[in-house]
Image (cartoon, rainbow over all chains, first blue to last red):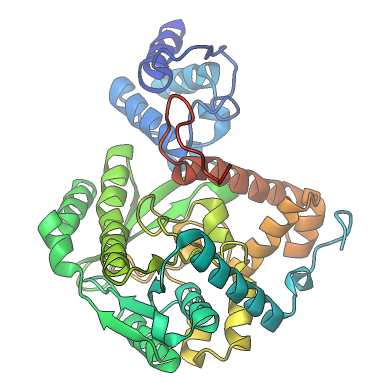
Length: 83
Length: 331
């Protein structure tokens, strides 16, 4: 799970933060509240998760509890891989 | 009306004729003192917003200085064009019908859109119809879009759009609003007129427009009006009944598509009240009481309005510069 979190952190850093000054993201920080991801950003994150981890994100799983922080994404992907 | 009582639709009431006159005076002043143009171009879709804008333009400066443009394309409803023509005749303005479909086809609008749709539904073909609908926000989820397609036999299927396909479909359909704006400005430049933007308050606030498309204009005379108010003023000004009773649609996709299923969380009358309540600091439970929903649902409505408002910031923003370069108002 630590691997997933690190990989997602790298994806977010590469594609959304892009090295901008003063943007630091804690494990439990909300992507929405920190305005790191908007709804299109979440779609991009979901496509990345589906392609990278071989999972299918169902419509009713597209909720902040599963996707709105590094920790919640890592937990969610780990659960999906076990399912 | 205060923030601690249940908001009722009458909070949107005003003296409709007086408001039309106020807007008309503002149009004249803006045109003469700020824009320094001789008249107004209004793109007329056949819907209520552009119809009211055209009527207000005529009220402000008379029919001889207003030019109406009707720009249908392949997915436009023929009834929209008929209503637009009815309006132009009712107002007595010069107007032109210009079919933008050949330009859109040449630019790849339909091809790019259909290519993306076929990546989701490989069997999608020329005789099929389609639309995209919004989902997620009102159920506490993350907003996303579904592609709905109808086969020639009428059977419908839907699937969530992945990011790449969603972006390509939106980018392709945005050609429509941008080509129309190009034509608006051709006529505005030719006539030395200014271009009227037609968003109502819901559209302006929530970002329901295309940047450098229908979002581009020289003046936006009804951007402060809730949709309910737009209808009421249109009726007060005596616009044709067919226009005052038409259901708001996007008129952008080949399947019938209401504005609320494409973008807004709620039908417009409820959206008006929700946006008004948010703007006036009304607690979610009181909004819920007004809309017949519980507090949690009303909080989701507020959250959805906030999310769309944030997304709209990019749409409203002018190009960034490293430092202020040109004063935006006289010193």
